Length: 423
Image (tube, rainbow, N blue to C red; front, side, top):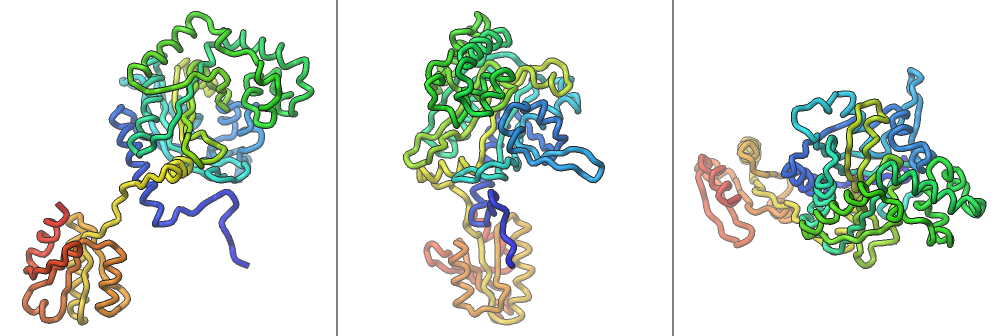
C-alpha cells in the first residue's frame, strides 16, 4: 500500500516554491521598510496559550486545534495562528522593556487547523503576519492596514476590497454585549448549539456564525456603531481619516466580527473581488487587541496586527492572472565533450558558483545534443562548450542563447566573461 500525503495538506513542488520565496521576500522587504523585524516562534506551544489567547468560545479552540500530550504529560497544541505565540514571546522575553517602542514584529510559518479542506483552505497552511505592540495611536492601526495593502499592491493584485469596523473599547463593548443578549435571547433556541453556548460567553461571536447567517435576527442585530462612546468614536474616526490621507479606499461594515476573542477597537478584512475567486473571499484579517498581553501574563500593553494565508494569496494571483517575476533563468550551462573536459568542468562550475552565478552541467553522460536540450529547458542564458581541443588551448566556447552569437574566450577569464552577461 502506498503512503499518501495527509488530507488537508499540500506539497509545494520546485516549480511553485520560487513563487513562495518571491512572496515571502517581498513581504519581508516591505515590513523592514516600516521597521518591523522578524520573529520565529515554535510550531507547538502549551495548549493553555491558545485557550487564553485565542478564546475558548472560538471554533479554532473548540473544534479545530491539534492537541496532544507529550511524554511528560504536558498538553501541547500545534499553533492554529501566530499572534498568541508572538505575544507569549513578547512577554517571556520582556520585550516590553526594549528601548525602541512600539515593538514591531513580522513572522511567517505553518499553522494548523482541523477544518474541512476546500479550495484555498488547508489543515496545514502558511501565514504571514505582523504585530505592533506598545502603542494606542490610531496611526499604528492605519499603518498596519497600509502594510497589508502594500504587500498585495506590490505583488500585483488589483481586485481588492478593504472592509473595516470598530469593536469599541471595553465600555462600548459591554453596552453592545447587553444589547445583543437582549436581541437574541428570546429566540436563541432557533440558532445552532454553538450560538446558544455563545449567548452569555461572547454574544458578538453569534454575528460570525456561518450556519445561522441568514436568520432574520442577524439582519436586525444591534450595531456596535450605535453603542460607541465618544472615545471609541473619535478613535475610529482617526483611523478612517489616516486611511483617507494615505489614499487607501475602504468600506465600513458594522457587521464585521473577527473570529478571535481578543479583538477590540479596529477590525479589518481584505477581500478579493476577482471574478471566479470562489465563495471564501477573505484574503487577510486583523485588528487591535489591547487586552491580550495581560491575558498571557504580561503588563498592560496595546497591540494590533494582521495575518494572511500565502495559499489564498496565490489563489488570488491566479484568479487575476498575475504572473510573478520569479527568476528562472540559468546564467551558464557547461556542455562537455570527452572525459578530460568533463573532469575539468567540475572546477569551472565551482568557480562560477563562487562568483555568485547560477550554473549547471550534465551528470548523466548524455550526448552533446541532449546536453543542449537540457540547457534550453533550464532557460540558460549562455552555453559554454568545452572539448578536448579547447582544453589543450586553454579556451572555451561561449554561445549566447538569445542571439545565437558565439565567441571563444580564455579559460582564465571565463568567469569574468560570463559575469558580463549577468549585467
